[in-house]
Amino acid sequence: MTSPVDQVGGARLSVRGLRKVYSGGGAGRGAPVEAIADLTFEVRPGELVCVVGPSGAGKTTLLRCMAGLLPATAGEVVLGESAITGPPEGMAVVLQEYGRSLFPWMTVAQNVELPLREKGVAKARRAELVRETLAAVGLGDVAGSYPWQLSGGMQQRVAIARAAAYEPQVLLMDEPFAAVDAQTRFDLEDLVRTLWKRLGITVVFVTHDIDEAIYLGERVLVLSARPTVVLEDVEVGLGQDRDQLETRGDAEFARLRTHVYELVQQAKKGARTLAEAHLTHPVGARDA
Image (cartoon, rainbow, N blue to C red; front, side):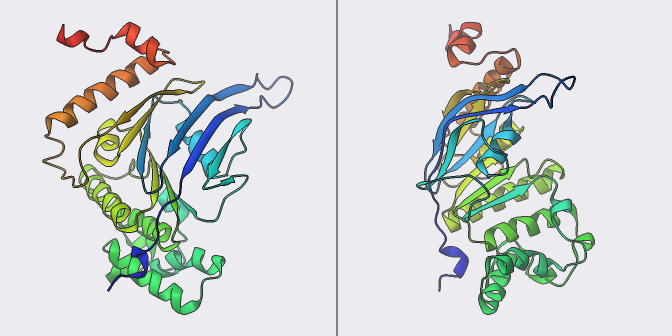
């Protein structure tokens, strides 16, 4: 029998000419800062896309604009057929600071249930979704525990379960595994891919870790230095089924890692277009 969390499905997410300028705050408080210059890309329904770039490239700013948490200076973000002007229904966000996103006085189950209550989901359905999603992330036996009684990796699983229980069409993730140890990180990466395939939702995953981006994504968007544009949209042809040892040991994984790493290094030097990056390090130069 198919469980309730197996029936979600994804939606198209389009970023069109997005520009974001932070105000300097008035006289004497600095000049305006252009964080994003011009971003245009599309994430197809049910696709998992990762975003990487140098520090300060505007990755978090992009995600907050996509989530409707920051207004765009120009351009738009469109979910399905509707422009995003505030936090939209059908979208969930998982942040790096998972400890601050969970309420310590609520049990694990209550934390997962909270957005469902606010959404107006019926009590019986809430209980079903909480039970199903906690089981899906391997936490069915700690529903009555409190977040502070759990490890960091388990707390992040709670945050992921809460997002999945909400039944979003789109899940945005902002460096969610940066604060956990390497082994836990690998486990959580596999959890994300398992849930993504199971639910069929659209996922945009922001990370500073190139290996993580390639392991998780069907595509990797490499951002330039600020003010930000898309330096390259890299297709990842590693197949649906991935394994931490076999996939990371694959020659194609190594090729993609090298290519994305070189793009990020070019971005750090200020290259803002693919042509500029290739002038510094031409494609195929290593094979000459």
